[in-house]
Image (cartoon, rainbow, N blue to C red):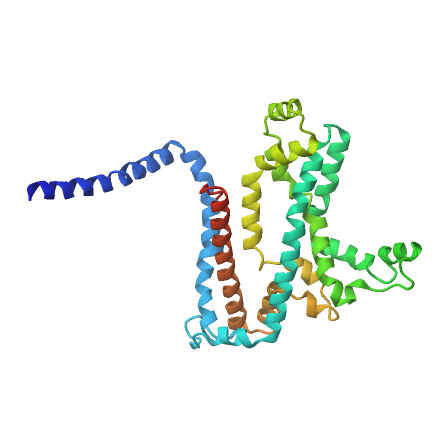
Length: 325
């Protein structure tokens, strides 16, 4: 019996041992790097104040809250707001628009920065390469207020696009493309890609700059042409950053660009233009239904979290158990 008791104690002590050095190591590292560690304190304070404390307001998703109530005085309604969501046709229209536009952006916009980064990387260092990088980055630094005004002007009946198509004999009479709801998904997708494709190449170019040039030299000796070198050396070297960006892109499917939609949406294309973020804004801020808007936002956050975890699990399996997060 003594042997068995001692054996149990030994097992318990061996289970506790790994945690103790880890905790001690954490405080030791923190003490040795307190100057660097203290730099994250403002970020933590900001996140606690503006991200965690406001989470208390999620309670109103389960209440009938008005501007005259407090969070505690508003009457509980349970899941009533979520039941209304399931029967709201305007919510489902916004849901379909959000998913469709996001999937189009994911299908085209995710691949476009990779292709552009490889094209820029293959250019020889010089003014042409620097010019291409600068031109591709520039739209990112312009707000959607500026770009939206440009697009509204270009797509108007007297705009650049109509004049070009009529001069080329493709169109007989001009048309306002932003008033055509059937074309909005493509306008939203392509304009967003045009704005962000250059900025999306930064991480890929940074990774490619660390690739050992001897890999390409060995491939040339083996007779590999440029396309084979890109396929077998460049792209595999970017595997982890591609997977990371894919996880973030999938988790952001329900976060369609709020600013873009708010600028480009009008009464004629609203049926195809309104996404969940603008729907929540319209219901909450303009109609004053804070509880319903909070319920929609909470549902979006939960689904986004599920997509994030699912995408991470899939990429982890594809990377043979290695996590990219």
